[in-house]
Amino acid sequence: MPTLPGDDARRIMWGFADRPDLQLLVHSVRGVARGPVARLVALGARNPCERTPEKQELRRAYNNAGIVGLFNEPPQSGHTEGPRNLARALAAFELAWVDASVATGGFMPRDHGGIMVAARLLSAVEPLIRYQRGRFHGGSPAGPGSPRYELGLQLKDDAVHRLVDVWSAGEACAALGFEAARLLDRLETLERAGCPMAERAMLESAANVLGPACKLWHSGHGSRMMREAAQLMGGYGMTEDCPGFLGYKWVDLQMEAACDGPEAVRRQLGEAMTNELFLTQFRGWIRDTQALADSHPETGACALTIAMEMWLWTLQRVPHATGTLANVLCRLLASRSQILGLIELQQKGRDHPSLAGSLPWTVSILSGLCHVQAAHTAGEVGRVCAEWVYGSHRDAAGDQTAFRDMQTLLESSLAESLLAKDRVAEVLTQVTIPEAPDYPARNHPESAS
Image (cartoon, rainbow, N blue to C red; front, side, top):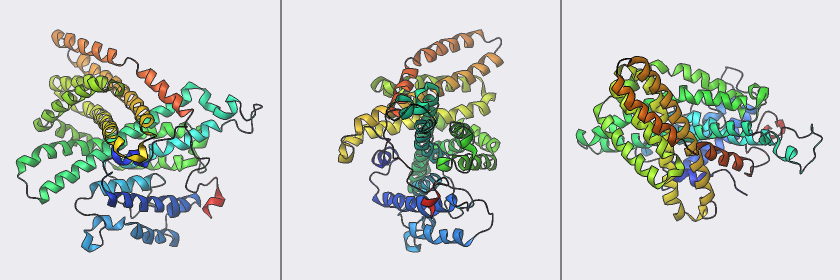
């Protein structure tokens, strides 16, 4: 039976399959997150604001896991050589998978590029599957073996399709965040090597966009999708006993989104994305995405290519729309990163024996998620661009004709996108998951003792 994508696939997609030091870091931080941190949350330790002895004990656990040392070079107790943006992002991801609030995460690295919302969204998939399937256990006349008993809410297309949307958003957010972290590491490496500014300029222009784009995605679309994940649990999603601590995660995300200052981030992104060096790269990305559309049409790259072209066309003709266009640029970049991560897995996964049996299925399901996210992105880009083109170009008949041609292409590129969602939804009704989470929960107090 198929399972959810595991660590072997993630290492390739997120760019640390050849970094045993980072793999060891992930293992260590995960032990802390799903051990001491999860036990504190399960026992209600989030509620007191005071720094209790139990919370103070986390400092020792963080030190042992190498989290505090992420800010130091190896001679000063650091655990990774060279730039460590990716290392910090991975640590933040593992901690946020369980809980990354101030109450339990005071010593963790700062969120790198919205990585924490990606962890929260992806961590919601398994608890939601478990909740949907067990919804009618004990309260239904249908016994074990019947579709209603075995699948529960997953008999309803709406419930599973909404879960697909949460999953695809989490994959896209993670892909964008880790790409931004790797880019910052590359840029820092060039700076340390004393490379001329001309060699760093292109990378810097991209980094100036990807960083704010991650933060803006985090406080905007990511926040909305986390609310959707909590709502899929019904009223249970807002309680302290919610599996996966989804209610806590949603509340934390609202606070972080407000503190990030989305308006300031949007202005920063609006300035960076109009830099000609970035726009030159963006045109190159469009050509690359078109090539992927020809070779991997199942990823939805065709819809993404046309959406990228429409975004660039609108930016050039409606320059005062930068604020709104900055919002949808985040979606474009996330969808592109998601597809690139899939291609990386497809190309390098066959060289990893541990993926030999699961690679075809993993690539197939992740391709469907890419297609779903690309279709959502294209639809939102089309809506936003149409609002600005038609709303501010009343007399520009020629521009509107050209835009309508792009709209027609965009709409036709959405062909089979819902079929891709149906395929992913069907897999979610078949995928094998553990009977219980691998960390303590409030509704399992015996596991927190």
